[in-house]
Image (cartoon, rainbow, N blue to C red):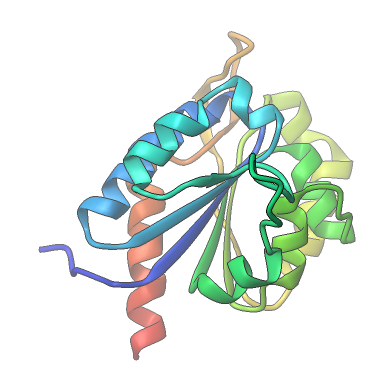
Length: 186
């Protein structure tokens, strides 16, 4: 039986085709009594709508530093609220930002303000995944305190080729979150 939790999970959704899998992850978390908030980058909104994520999470979705009422979405408060930050899918661009501390959107500002467990689920095409720059960035990230980089899967990619670079399935990411929460309680 899956253990119930009241943990706060903040999901950062970036602009990769694997973003289509995130609604299922959000649904799994909410069904198991996690409180879920999300930040979506501009490019993520081409793959899944904020409205879909909002309905499933039962929370507003944060997409920029200011909401439609011109009120500030405080990245520090979002970072303080969350027990775990999940970045999925984590594109090559986002991995570079994480590795080198670039801050050009609400997700990255929140990430840089966050000091608890970060779970990163990379997703990209095989050639990108195998690129030495991406691998170097992953090595930097793996050496950061409180960071867990999930392995990618092998299979058919959005480009139509088969290779390494598929994001972990939502159930696998959910199971990792459950394990992290269990370890936090011990």
